[in-house]
Amino acid sequence: MSILVKVDHGQIEKLDLFPIMDVIDNLQKVGGLISAEQQVKFEINYSLSDTDPREFSEVPEIRLWFVALDAKYPWLPFLLDWREGELARYGAMLVPHEFKRGEGIVYNSEALDIFIMGKVFVLYDWLKDQGISGNSRLKAMAQIFGYDLDDGFFGLLR
Image 1 (cartoon, helix red, strand yellow):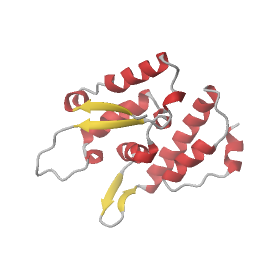
Image 2 (cartoon, rainbow, N blue to C red):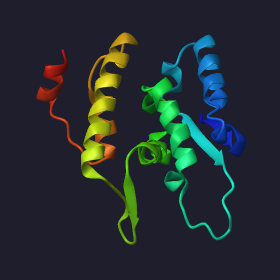
Image 3 (spheres, helix red, strand yellow):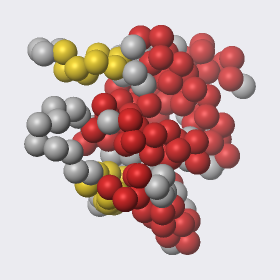
Image 4 (cartoon, rainbow, N blue to C red):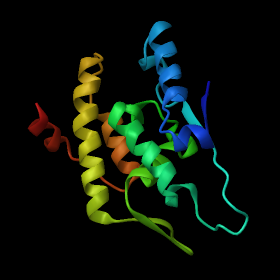
């Protein structure tokens, strides 16, 4: 089951996080966030002119909305629908990148390192607080961005 979060132009302009806050509040009331693992997708309704070639991840106002979102819910990648590309899009909103013909999105490698390690640290603790053990989710998340995390690395986090 997918959970669609619709965000419109006005909400982005006002940094209004209500659409996702409402979803998270409802999830917490009906059994918790764990039940929504990898189910959240965003529908962004933000109008650009017909001559504007930018992707949403290149629009500063949209990126700022996602920065605010990440500050409020740094563990949100757990809920994003990875199979539908939501994690990669989320990363693109937060990590400097370029679009290259034939290659697609190319992240700034140092910024991506910081993003991935930051998310691993946050999610490691958050998952532990949720009673979820093991590192397979964190390894899978990192692999989406081309990182292979060794089990020995997780020994440092204990």
